[in-house]
Image (cartoon, rainbow, N blue to C red; front, top):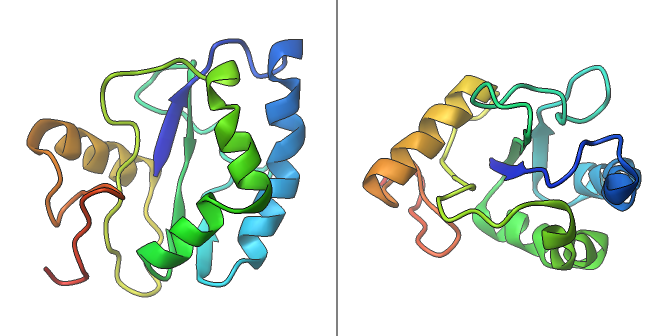
Amino acid sequence: MNIARLRHPLDSVELKGFVDALDPVNAVADASDGFVWRLQSDTGNATDVPVFGDEWLIMNLTVWRDVDALTAFMYQGRHRELLARRFEWFERVEEAMTALWWVEAGVRPTARDAELRLLRLREHGPTAHAFTLRKTFGPGE
């Protein structure tokens, strides 16, 4: 899961490039090797799913086969292009905004599950319960 703090409202002209890219990037993710599932509301994404009760935060919550599949998607193609522009759309934040963890096959984490994992990561640093791309743990560790 990752969250981001918006610099402008989602319907603003400043975020048009990000909003216009959501559906195409999600379509690439959905078709990517190793992709399993993503949280989405009726809008087809999760930008309107509440995060920590803060209307300026948006969430992306996905399940991937493994860290390598997630990393391959993140740093290639259109997602990589958008990642390079993230500070146009989102504030720089000191605290952890991304947390990874293993789930059993068929499990679909909730937004609350994600919030709790991120809070745990912020409090204890990377552990098998919640980790980062820089410090990963294998399943069952």
